[in-house]
Picture 1: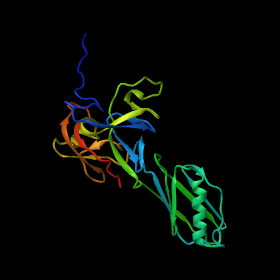
Picture 2: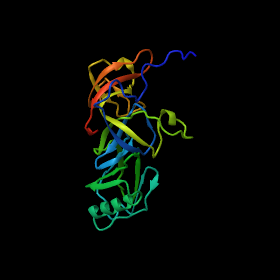
Picture 3: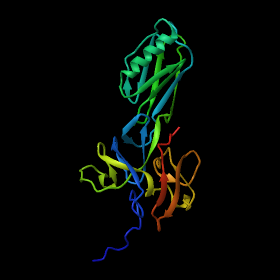
Picture 4: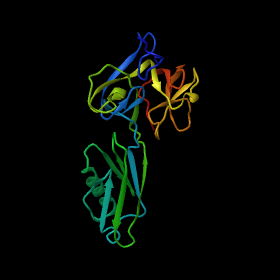
Length: 252
């Protein structure tokens, strides 16, 4: 029986003799592809996610007063908080705002300083908007970015696992499946473009865009790892082997 050309590399596979390989287990909290980078959060040793712009910062143009803030509304990730109004002072009103937003989701991290409201939505891409009603009401400008609590866990290993009916489960893990990431050793990973990879040069993880979570040899605004490229796939495969010694490096 002929199998044709079998790929030399496969995303997520360990490479070579792996006597010194070190892996760590996590639970996938969303779909995670073989050979891409998994991320986690400071203080959470159990869960793995993809990388997200998980922080939204809303900056108000002026302090709240009795006349300019008769009603304040905030929407985070499509969830609308209950309207609040000015209460005694700007600082007290901002504290009320934090309580109202936090009530939308207990897993979020909500804080305020001065005119700035910050919401971190772990494992989710954040979005936000606000409307203030009153005379010459302040406006609120949202800016989305990645939180300082995000850390690299490592590339996702491929493993034999029970079949599921979920589309794409043969290409990675689905929500609530247990997976392992490689923290030390050699592994085949997905790269953005094989043209960006040179053997024995540094490895970076792409932080944003459609290639987020893939590896690359391009620095730019990407995340530097304690890793180097060891081997490059042949043909059109955007796969490469890296040697990694990762110690939960922070994203920000």
